[in-house]
Image (cartoon, rainbow over all chains, first blue to last red; front, side, top):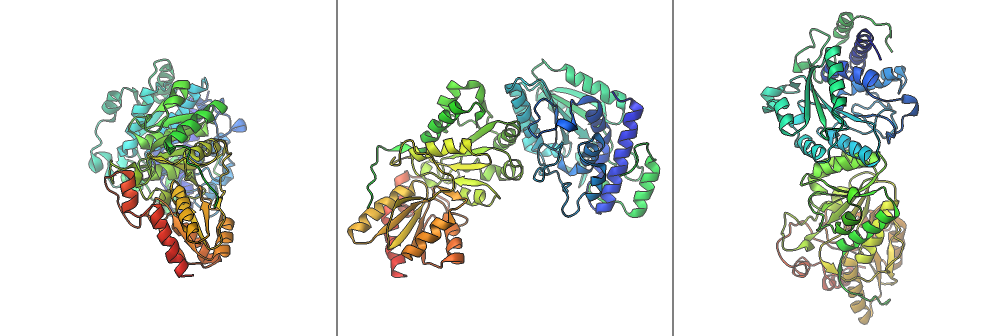
Length: 282
Length: 317
């Protein structure tokens, strides 16, 4: 198990990677990448049973993770690199011609750690439910994790999947929503009136856990509670309250950094604020 | 003219149901999934024999596609079944990302295709599905001609690794191909060799093409009839060879002009062996309520219209 301090170092390095990758590519989605960096770091390093050395796309014998909100690929790729699935140096190719690190995750060139393409929103929860059902059919004890955005949850298919997962008793499914309250056009509340996700998922008969997506103790408790739900025959939704752009003051809490690259000067200032870590930049 | 015997009319969707059951017996990875259309897709026998491998998804097709992709990633071979419109047009983006771009081993079982589902009317009659599925890179598109071939194509689809769109229909149509003939994906089946004109047909219009060829033979016209059971990848060599031999082509399908077999064949011919072509298809239409046979006649998809198209194309030779 990694300590909170170690997790903090990793997620800070992941945020540095995100800022540098998006700045270098001159495009990409830093805001949601930074809001989900802490709980996804905890998931990959402390919670998921996963081994890059024996990874296969069918996920046999391992926990699996699906990124439904595919636009936050920077946090995904950084974590895959820092966890050992792909070389850290490969992060420099993000969004550049010929790369495996496409703007949105792709499986077509074989990217270890990535089970499925994503980008068109609202679909990953269905894929994760299918994976979880397959594990049930095979008597496989491992779990399936999936992350959706709160803006993404405006897609109707999310709620179709929500119904399916309950009907098929997928208590091996741990879904997470990065509840940062922001989407491209403004706050989630102002764009489509999504309302109270906690009440909605409870009404959908899921095990619902609300946690602080930037507090490693809260994150750890949420995952422990989610895992304890196995046997209840209900899937779990962890709603991680978070800040878009978390970690850099001028990027935090605003939709303006949903899908915008920092300038070189802004990148330098962001890196100064984040501080260096023992892991080092790619 | 080679003789074909109709061994009794059967619906092609029942051929799918029989093939699914056989594929399920042969390989325990095969799953059947549907969005509240188990009976319409003839999945009852499979569901009864393999209840744990039948997955009811409810009226939620988008989720069904995604869940199928997940099951396929984990090593299963899911067949997702619904009406042609609801398993293509309704979920085009899901199929594109999860099945096609995502390279998952999902089989799309598309029933009630075309106008011949009949009385339900235009909301349920898709004449555009082949265009949508052909447009997807690497998608295999199969439209078998009768019960036996649909059964055999279903078994072949289960054995093939990769996305497959398998199209069939609701009405009972003549059953005339061999009962247990191994279906070869990508093969154009030569139903009759001829020298004056080639008729390429797909689905149950193959029977109509054979009937047309029979009547034309009596008038001294020798018709080559090709059953294009696999629409993509199209057996271009077979199309080119036949067009070179006869110098005139008719393409018959229960689909609109845009994106269908007709355009696929025309493209191949234009690039390789420019040949006069006449088209038997829906043109640019939405269907309407009616019996299958009344609709076939009204929209000009039957043997009589194929024979007329043959004479027209011969006049252009």
